[in-house]
Image (tube, rainbow, N blue to C red):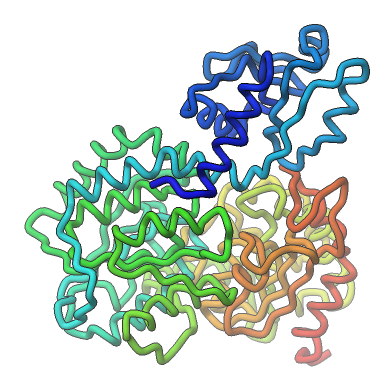
Length: 519
């Protein structure tokens, strides 16, 4: 299934390698593995990997060299393929003062697309041959048993709730099932729109599509067993992917579950305005009944609803929602009684950590905010720290001198967290699952982003795509990147996001909440 782009890209990389005496890949991570795979596929090879800080002696069977080591070996007849984020030729040239090796200038996104095609194409062809019974023309009257597959994080699962509700409205008599990660069971166990919930044991496996394809044999056995255990004697008519296809996280798991469900209709979506996804989308068209590919950037919740509309269904309500149990409500009653929460007090939920450090605002900033409101309002405005055990360390850095802090980090499950959030007046914090809990209950928000002012609306931390939904909100975005960051912060620690000051957050809180307080 090669196309012109793939041939040209492969040729550029292989021709470069063929013209060099030795070829070294600068970077021993996902990009490095990608270039290595493409070279191998075209009959070429790499002589080793170069790293700035050497921590091991080899990578995928090839030697690793530090800059000092390679400088003694390399010549002007040799070539270097840059393979790390934000790599550029002038920067690399500066590291070789006396020798000027040849350096390939190649778009990493195009490389990833080539590598993904290389691994994904034979896999999807194999599945299509094993499960050939696919219907290409939609007849919704046949959709009596419906399956939804979403193996994702907490917030992303909440994005799916409007889709589930509107799906039920369109198919009130159909049997609707869903497959979710076991860790997200509490989010949907009380959902009135789902007849059956299947729990899939899986961690969130980040990584390029090609990396996941390498684990195909192991995953295939795992999911065959899952299907035999859960889908036996169940004849699904249609399977939906509310999440973007090929998004790089548990993608192969989701596809395998869909195929092993033996549903005759497969409905999914993809963002084809991303150049590295266009060819992959073309590859999948023959494997799906319908692939929704809106060109206009949308919120993640809206993408799934758009997919529903493209199937000829109606959407009456786009809001997210959540459902708690009576037991969770009673547990939160006891927590509020324990902390002396009174009806006249305003509660601000704090989301002080995100799933990645880049999106996490420093705990010291939250400490400044809690202290400020303690001085101004005492216990009239109280802050409630939410989150799992990962928030406990940061929570310990926030002072409670004024008694206006309630620390629930690590103390509530997902259902209890939802019950807490529905009683809050405002959410303040990172773009994380707690933000989407707030939107599901109509709670306004002040969100602190690592996405930069020059970021794309389709980025994974974009306020447009991943932010608050259908509620009043203020989005705080860093003005510019630091240390070469652009679009989004590229560091692995709390970095660009800390350009946002506590004073900015206080002003945003005052704009939404404080004018409504009786002071």
